[in-house]
Length: 223
Image (cartoon, rainbow, N blue to C red; front, side, top):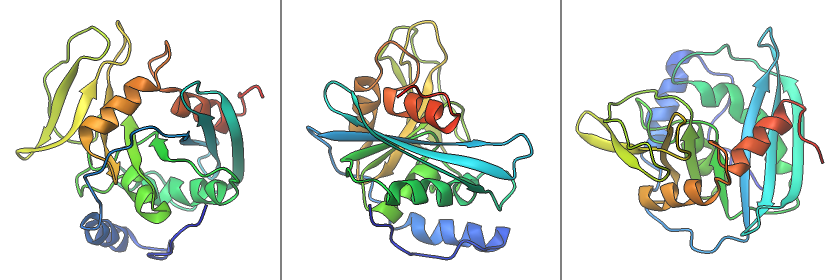
């Protein structure tokens, strides 16, 4: 996959926030993925010291969600964890892994936020813009906004709202488990993003692309 160069990576906190605010205006919040051939998932695992990380991308075939390709990259993580700046910490490793793919996914599910972010530019939006692909933010926790509690049955949702703006959906992907926070990453509308998260959940709380990417990044994916 080709990666667009829209900014440098050696930035101060102030500069990184300015990049987010500037690029957020370029995120496309519309679009529909209808019948994808390949769905990818990405994740990063950091060492205990937080200085070294493993970025993973897995590509699954649809509709069977069989594993088609896995790429794993290990390297230094230059930026310490700071809320709201996760993409500057994790994106470089994920992008290096994506560059090695021989299979081009039609949609990418990201373990992180899309526009459900204080500056409306989380990891999923950042990756979508740099890769020019539809991306979905699928996070395990809330970064900003408020919401009602969705019903306990699978498929129930609640709006995630911040300053009067709907920025995502709180989605119950499995009965009896905590919901996920789904948001537009890039080139997809929210309803379609929720659809693909649920479509990719096969008995687990996490959708298969993200679940397998998490295992791959942690060195626990059995091929």
